[in-house]
Amino acid sequence: MGVVLRNLQKVVPLRRARLRRDVDTLRHILGIQKFDLGIICVDNRRIQQINNLYRKKNAPTDVLSFPFYEDLRPGKLPCPLHRDELNLGDIFLGVEFVMNQCQKESLDLHGTLTAVTAHGICHLLGYRHETEEEWAEMLQRERYILSEYNRLTGRHLEPLMKAFSPET
Image 1 (tube, rainbow, N blue to C red):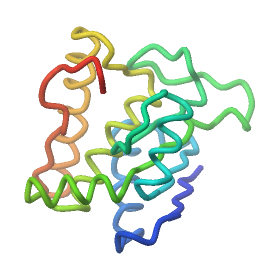
Image 2 (image 1 turned 120 degrees about the horizontal axis):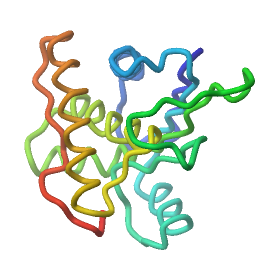
Image 3 (image 1 turned 180 degrees about the vertical axis):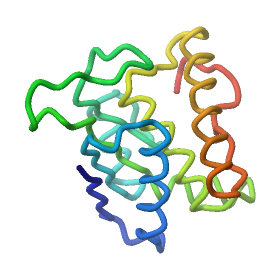
């Protein structure tokens, strides 16, 4: 099963091969290699449109996730009955938004995109951060994923979620 990685923006030069390798590593860590996953890289205009349409927030953001399994409990993998259900869903990466954040905070773009993608995958796997308890559970999972990623790659990525905020 695979990853469909589309780059629909032209604002930020993007190394798709590196992002694909990083996503494959994340999938390996989570044991979700048999599931399909869509990752769509978009600019601020497009992510703002999607954010406004689906979340009624008229602002760009770093990531939006659209899970195939909407009622999945955090930490539980789906149990598909048919081949066409081997899908986790789609993640829209606001690459321009992420690049702007990286410039403000002197962060590496590709490392940050990997951390944001890990966050998006957590959403596809049922994690939320609408309450402080959910936030803590999701942060713990992201820390585990990125610590394993760092162990396997020698990198030093950390979750981008720093404090609970019900608005995000």
